[in-house]
Image 1 (cartoon, rainbow, N blue to C red):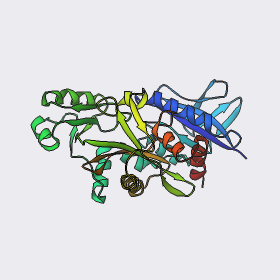
Image 2 (cartoon, rainbow, N blue to C red):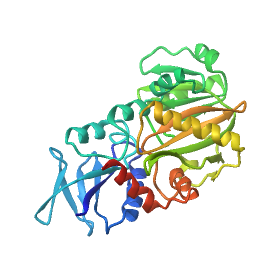
Image 3 (cartoon, rainbow, N blue to C red):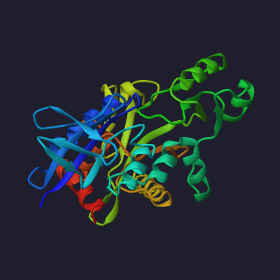
Image 4 (tube, helix red, strand yellow):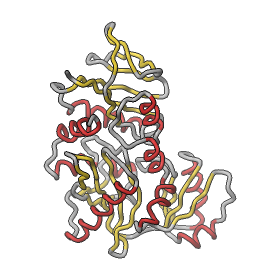
Length: 324
């Protein structure tokens, strides 16, 4: 009997539009001869199931079911493609865990931890994973610009602590621009992290559960046309993404091993994508994304293709793994 799959997409953050695109790609490629696949839009205004004719059906949040043509739909598994809250910060994972419905991303604690950049870094550092110097601020804190810059230097990056797709990030080159950058980040989150600038080659590494193993995918080098790998570079084509990355075999192994170590230390599962910069010839961890983009332009699908894994195989195996 075919398993019934809900593709969860949308969410409540500024990344909702990107998530809808990721979800549509998964919908197009999951094998329909193997699964009954439904798109579910989980948005602030409503949670709805979209049928094959584009009609919306309300989702009952008490048990995550929907009525379609007089039939109550119960889902065997949720394919989570929500970037940002509630699908990447642990809220959806916890909700589905209570309902005993398996889902394809990491568990709720791991999602909450990795979504919080500064907490994630704090956990990884004792395991010997290099990172940038950082300075942490909460909304309402007194801000001492000279103290901040004494620790992180210039230029530096000011980031919203819990946001994705490079929302709420600025590169600051002059002290007089620091306060404006902090205010900009506070528009996305009430916690921010300020990091020292790491000059070097930026790379991204997908790590996934695939056919009973933890697999590091081919490395992608990111060359942004802008100051850094921002939203326009990620989604509007203003970057060059080279997969496999033109780095040495030793560098490739180093960063793949580090990405797998992050995956294992944090007890992750499903699809992940970790970002690093080779600074002074050493890979430094930036962040890990536990619900990475799955659009045609996204990095993880590019890396899977370079590894000889089609999108259908990639997405199908995610369901197979979680139902074991």
